[in-house]
Image (cartoon, rainbow, N blue to C red; front, side, top):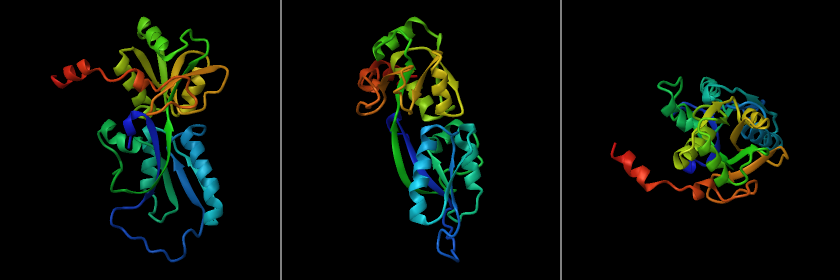
Length: 249
């Protein structure tokens, strides 16, 4: 679920065909449990999975192993988990891509509903737009004005095509009319590092307290502690005129 296009909602899911009941011959878990993450190490999903694994270890009495399988907008990890034995030993930590991907890919090698059993929502992560500190724009409105004056000259990085970072930035483009070019990466960590040389903006979920980057604004219902301004969705509400023109097409 992609709440107001402003949050990553991370969910633990279990590969389990619908209606199938798995008989356990021994109390679960009798061996290590794996959490498969659809993004590479260093991003918020990866860090979250490792915190969960650390907390589950003493509770379950078994090691909980985090395994990263990035690529294809999360489909590589999701397909892998869907093909594992439905015994509760392989979990998937996924975000909104799990429900968005059916709209981005004509055919998926799994059924996002029938092949999985949701366990729990574990986190909501607000987005913050970060730019290199050398950029002359100091406020979000100045950034938008700067981008409007230089159409097509700036890029923004995301965790991949169809990922919530990508959709949040496209929403910003739609609401402000700016022309910035999407550069997909295999994770938010890579896009954030790319922002350091000053070549791109990054709708990142990571901390922005580095002296080499500067957080402009978040995209949520309330202001993020990491951002210096109110949410950009409040500063740039939907245009009624644009909505009407699209509805008549």
